[in-house]
Image (cartoon, rainbow, N blue to C red):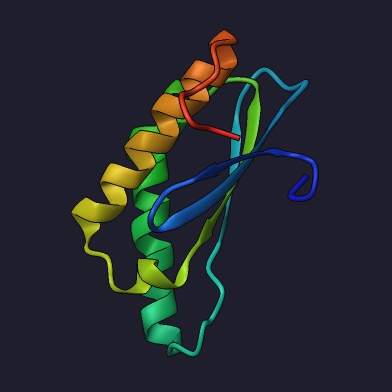
Length: 105
């Protein structure tokens, strides 16, 4: 899916999305090490999981997403990650509706 999916980039996330035959959406989270400690990596994963649970999954339907953290995600606070997840949510809704997001590839 990562090679085929439509790409959405934000400052802290690189997201791939692909339409699904299921009646519900799924989200996978990838946080590469990028030379950081396990504690830092787990913090980023916990923040992203919580944001996906609260902000992204409730409105996601028939789409599989993979969120991959960029190196900048390690320096981001919770609100910066929330802004990026909200941006992903809006852009996926536009794609589900069939209208392309401006400037997206």
